[in-house]
Image (cartoon, rainbow, N blue to C red; front, top):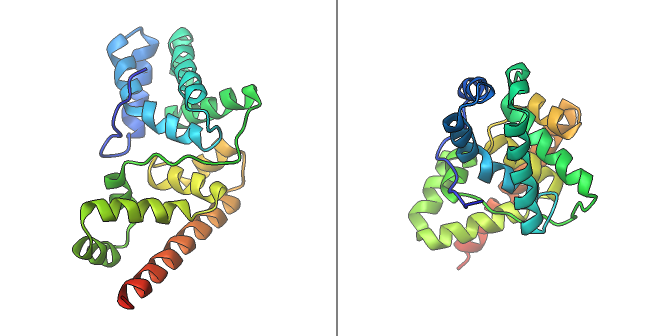
Length: 201
């Protein structure tokens, strides 16, 4: 499967329903559009469970293969996004090779747009070059505990709502909210410490 850059904006559920309806009717064009929209999102999500990149790409490819092979059933799916994320997780669980480590592979421009507080973002952009900013972002995200990071990415990058994340991960909404709080608190602490270090230079 080819590597495709992340989309600049998150996929819209209504568009996904239309695509599923068209795929159910045998449209290869709709299938290719859905693949382009979700392949990298699902690979990144899968890497939060499995560090083997080859296995990740294989399982995500299996998801799309399954979708096409069972396309007649897609018209009954109410939320395609939740459907494919849940399927990806289940495919990995079937392998019984869940990893404790998380490999982060983010489109940094999307990260900036989704979770940076405007004033902090402006300060960083003004004070650092693009390469330094990318390194700083990687450092910040890497500080978030793995389970909280997975939920943070699903919310801020994949555009899933809390109840959808809870459905995919078999968690309560309250647990999802708790992990989001941990993630945002971690980001704030790292940014505060970074600013303090910069001011003492």
